[in-house]
Image 1 (cartoon, one colour):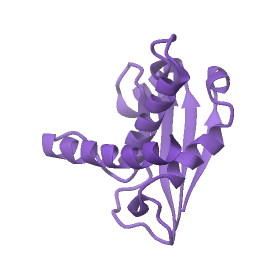
Image 2 (tube, rainbow, N blue to C red):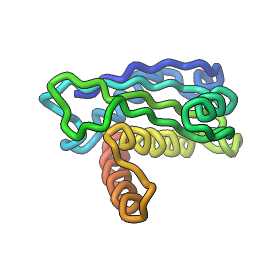
Image 3 (cartoon, helix red, strand yellow):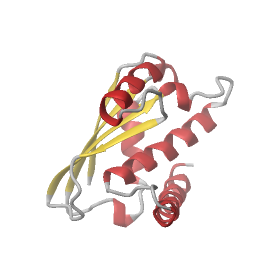
Image 4 (cartoon, rainbow, N blue to C red):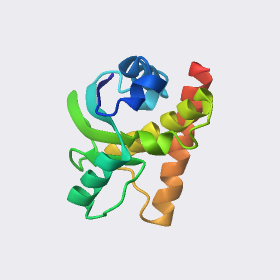
Amino acid sequence: MININVFSEEKAWSRRLKRKEYFFNQICKAFPKKYKFSNKKVSLTLLLSNNKKIRKLNKDFRNKNKSTDILSFPLNKKKRLSKKTYIGDIIISYNFIDKPKSQKFKFFKKKLIKIFIHGFLHLLNFDHIKDKDYKKMLKEEEYIYQSVSSKLN
């Protein structure tokens, strides 16, 4: 089971996403079986932010002075999850998800689900530094997204 603590420091999120915690919990419930962690208690924190705040975090923690769509901070590098595991933090920038501003909610939601899955996989120590790792991560993202989109649409 996955438990997500959702926080928001950007008011614009509330205009687009009324029930934030419910939304992200529904995504996790629609994950394929291998990512549901049925016999475990896996938790993470999600901060819904904006470009200004994410830029500061990116500079402070990654030494990159620019905003980005998402940041993921895995708690540790161990591969195995114990019965009760906190896997880390995800921060998503509203400004990136809401481009273009004229996009319909359906596309906003699709981008948000995809970027959340991307961040989630980073918490499980997937990365995309090497080409082979990029392909592996992309395959897993698509696998999870197909499961989620088939159950939520």
